[in-house]
Image 1 (cartoon, rainbow, N blue to C red):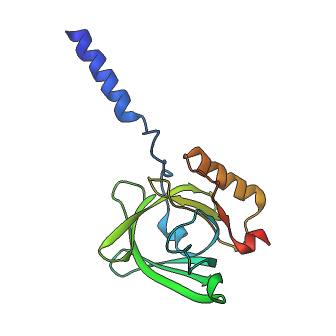
Image 2: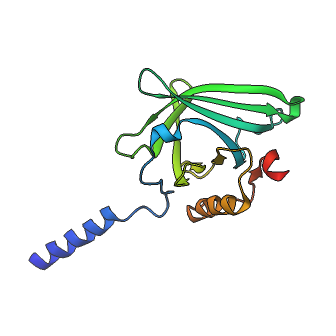
Length: 178
């Protein structure tokens, strides 16, 4: 009986300490103060708000600012290539999920609906970031500059692949292509 309990305890401990291989794994921690500011999208998986029959976002930026309530203000901007590069923008807010080291956030552009925003890869100098969510439908590679050196882009994309993302439909930003 004692052996069975010990075996069960060890098995349970192994289950608890192992990450779920079916879920993308966020980085251990994000320094929000270093993360704030403007990021340029260099690649993404297509998603409804940026890619549709009437919208094709190019020159995308995401600007994160501190809010008085402790949340993070989010301002996404792009030029709609299907409408003569007409500017578009969306304002939202985000908050860090407790216990995530600020690596998992909940973001809302349409209150009261929030979506997942997980930091899956982050350059040590905060020059680029890989952002995704648990279902792997959406992915963004962001950079502090409009163009990311190819080797760094490949490192970021390697993180996405290691987290189970299919990069076949990946859209690379105009600045990155050119």
